[in-house]
Amino acid sequence: MLKTLDENAERWALLVFYTMLVATMAIEVLRRELFAYSSIWGEEVVRYAFIYLVWIGAAAAVHERAHIRIDILLHHVPARVKAMLFIFGDLLMMAIAILAVFWSAETVAVSAKFGSVSHGLRVSMVWFLLAVPIGFGLMIIRLVQSLVRDVADFRAGRDPYEGERLFD
Image (cartoon, rainbow, N blue to C red; front, side):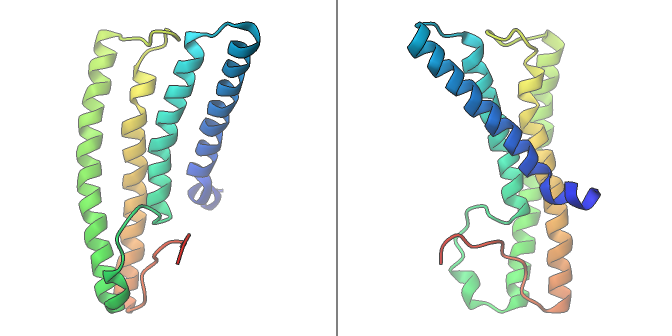
């Protein structure tokens, strides 16, 4: 069960938020075109589902090592150097993610302290602001997994995991 969760957690969450986004947007378009009526809550649901989609998608990209990078140099270096470059990149991203979690958690705390709510849904903004620390928290977990994998590859002298290629 944990292995399945580890492999698919982000995918399931992305599916939920993407379905929510598409279904709400379709309903709102139909309401607007057929009934000349639209709601403020529909736009907010789409906006906040998209925000969660982006941050969870960023963690999924880290897991699959699918984030954007310029890898022309990586094609011309030995496996150990390539692994060291990936380790350096993961450590740098880890530092940024840790800072982002702390800074975004502060924003969530301020929102909780003052009780801010969204305009249309009238739901606490904490639920929507949590997208950033949740996304970066997931990234940290995935970066730790990546670092463990890259250090093992470095020690063994094998090519590090580079992710799936979309284009060659």
